[in-house]
Length: 508
Image (cartoon, rainbow, N blue to C red; front, side):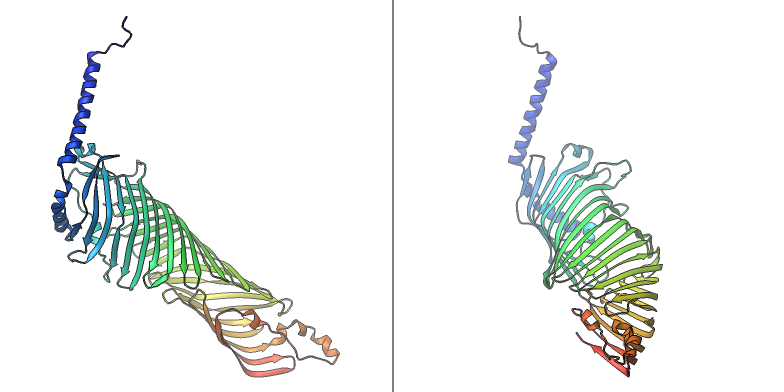
């Protein structure tokens, strides 16, 4: 009896075909490796780049073939010039591209992976708004029936230098690491490319070596080149920067962003947006958080739902905190308006506490980074050891503005405070930390109202020993602030003492 399974003719035929195809494939690979020299195509590649992009390409390193884990080609030591110029635009240490063979038979180029190592490029935004990469990113019609598909992109040791000629801004993006993987196909994806992206980089300033920001980002990318549309969903951003004078900046942000860049109707939108930033120095800190459910820009028109925010300043001797809200936003990039802006602030130190509530319509210019509160109203209450038991109250009105480009803020207010008529002008510049300046005019000020020792005036008058003493700890409370200004008082009273046209100057 035969103990081995019987082999049919069909089995022999299958084994024969499999062995033959394997030998043929291995022979082809050996032939290509031995006979085919990809470096022979260098002149043709250089010619095509010059013809199609009007740029000079140099291939100083060898071009090599790879077959495992997938077929591909590797370029070494590349450089590319600016358009119609011999000036260097970019250099790359190595580019490795792997692709699938069978899709080529269907006129499809499926790239498994693109690995780029050591890219260095100079990006320039010219005064007219154009850039030196417009010709490289401009969409061109693909050959009919030809489809390009990329599965994965990896970049490491990348550096991009950016210069804006209009504002004379210079930044360098160093240590860029990018990982982008094709996301799962969706029924509604259409022609959009969908990827999961992780990105990390450092930002430095050529003229400010002490400034260094490290940033990490994760998001889901949807890109449709034909419609010039992209969306970043589920964005998670974290950044940490070292600023001058040992100051650190911490940023976290999240949200969904989309943009359509068609010339006939550019549109941007943000939803579920959060932004948290903190500034830390040796003896103080500043934190701010902003939350917006939806913000949109269509052409020049701006729309937005309610915006909420919180802020806190922790100084060496004081703590200031606040919250603000902004109603729906309407208008244009250069002239937008929100009907209701409110802010509640509270400041405390060891001896006193101040609460204030502000309200006004808000207007602004996004392009100029300018904000205005044209009908500002303020209700203020102060309590402390050097103030009356019930504290003091005030009501002021006026206007305020903030210029983000020059980093200056200004407010002009008039009203009453502790039964005195007040006209005041305040300004701040620099912001981190701010330089404060003020000019205050008071018609009449009775210091007895600020001294608890004078509140029992009647009892001490009965003893016939009224003391001409009072305490005013204002200067102690201002210790550590970068502040200067003047206070002018028409009539100053303290007990039986009175003076007119009094001026108090405060210098840092």
